[in-house]
Image (spheres, each protein chain N blue to C red):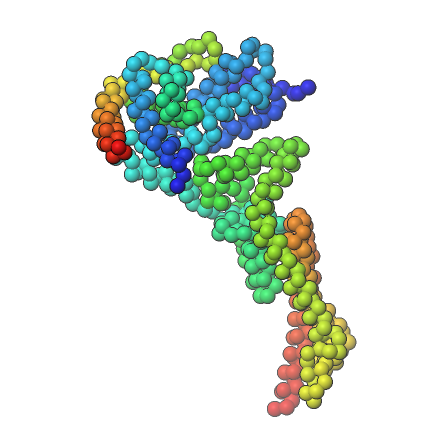
Length: 353
Length: 107
C-alpha cells in the first residue's frame, strides 16, 4: 500500500504515488533551474509541464488511475535530462548574435565564484570548507593550513574570525553553486549533486533524506578519501612522535640539553630549578609549556586518527574547541611566567650595570 | 574527443532547418513535430525541442495558436511565418551547398 499525492500539472489534476511524486518533482525542479538562465525559460517550462501532463493522460486509462514511478521514468526518458534543455552555441542562428550569445553563454558557465561559508560541510562555521570550495582545494588541506597558522602564530584565529564575519553563509542551492563557481546548467555530475542537495533540503526531516545525505557524503568523500587516509596516517604518526619526543626532552633524565660541564645530559625538567624562582611560577611555567606544546600535538594526533579511520569529521569541532581553549590557557600561563622572568632578568641586568 | 557530443552538435545545427521544413507542410503541435523528426534520428529526447520552438517563435520565424485537446491540456499549434519561410529558403540553400561539399570531401 502506498500513499498517493494529488497534484496539479499544467492545470490538470493527477493522483501520483508518493515515490513517483518525489522523483517527478525533483526532475521538474531541476528542469526549471536549468531553464532559469535560458531565454524564454518560463514559457519553455510551461510547455514542458503541459507535455508531461499530456503523456500522463495518454498513459493512464482513466483519470482515477494513479501515476506510478514507471510513468515518471517514461516521462524522464522521453523528455531527456535537464542538460538536454540547454540550447548551445551550435544553435545560434543569427550570425550577428552569435558572438554576443557565445560570450553570454560562456560567462554563464563560469559563474563568478563567491567566498561563502559552507555550513553544511563545515565543522565550526564552515569557513575552511568555504575557502576550500572557493580555491577548489581539498578541505583537509585548508583546515591543516588554518590549524598551523593558528597554533604556530595565532594569526589563523584572527583570520578565521574575520572570515566568519565577512563571508555570508551559503544558504540556498544557488548560493552553494555560486560558492563553487558552477553554472546553474552544465553537466550531469553537478546536476546530480544539485538534485541531491535539493532533495535533501526538501525532505530534510524524512529518513529518505538521511539516506540521501549519507550517499552524497559518501560519494564526495570517496574522492578525497584515499588522500585523507594517507595524510591522516602521517599526521597521527607525526603527532605521536612529537609527543614522545617532547616527553623525552622534558621529563626524562636523558634530555638533550647539555649542562654546564658539557658532559651530562639534562632534561628541561632538571633545568627548571634554574629558570623558575617560585613554586607557583614553576607550576605555571610547566603547565603552560605542556599545554602550549601538547595541545596542538594531541589535536593533530586525534585529527590524524579521525582522518585515518574515516570517522565523522564533525566531532573535530568539539575536539578543536577543547584543544584551543586549553592552548589559550597555556599561552596565558606562559606569557605571565615569561613576563615575570623577563622582569627578573631586567632587574638583574640593571643591578649589574 | 567525445563522439556523442560531436554527433549531438551535428544534429542540433540542422534541427532548426528541419523544424522549419516540417512546419512548411502544415501546422503541427510539438508531439507531431517530434514524430516527424524521430524518423530522421535528429532528435533524441523531447526536451531539446521545446526551447528551440520557443526561440524560433520569439525570433518571429514561427506563429502559434492554442487549441483545446481532448487528451490533456491545450496544445500549442505552430506554423511557419513569412519571415520563417524566407529563413527556410536561405537555410535550405546553405544546407545543400554544405551537404554537397561535405559529401564530396568524404568520397
